[in-house]
Image (tube, rainbow, N blue to C red):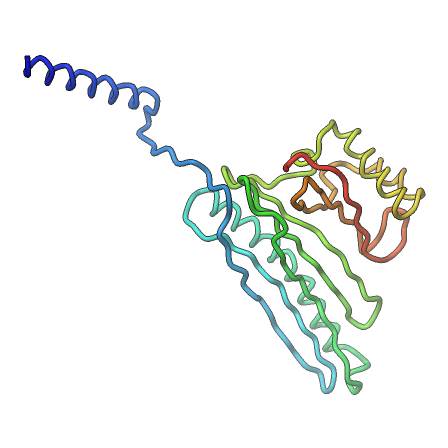
Length: 231
């Protein structure tokens, strides 16, 4: 009787092992995606002077902690955004070097500050607030980078707002018309959805960012909030 039970348990164990092997033929370990990201923010900064005039460059680079393929993909994307600012950094210090106002106390700057606005349910969103001034018009603007932690995908507006492309643009254009100017409705409807900059917030909110040059041609940062689908 005891031998029969031993053989029975051994048979069930082998059957379970075969089931696992068939469901995962490559032998990969299945790991559930993190619901929340762990991260750090690195200050990339340089300051230079030309007599009394100073120029400051700052970029706050977020980097996720971990070694998964998804984390590496997200960190690579975030580093690419940082590298895209380096040409503007060079322009800032060129403006400092050639400035006719170097004998006056003052500051030129190009700063990009980072804040996490959403970090749960398998998604993380970084909001960037930018300021630029190099002797001319002071420009300020915001944008966001949103990622799915499961696979590292960078999300577009279609991933966070319900509806087809036309419906999504209508939602944005209507919100803009009510908050800012009806003159912006047509220019927004002519955009491609891939052009919209945004960040997400809790309570099902998507903040669509415009600026420093607005859809109807004005200058200055503007943002409108519409309903999203990531609760």
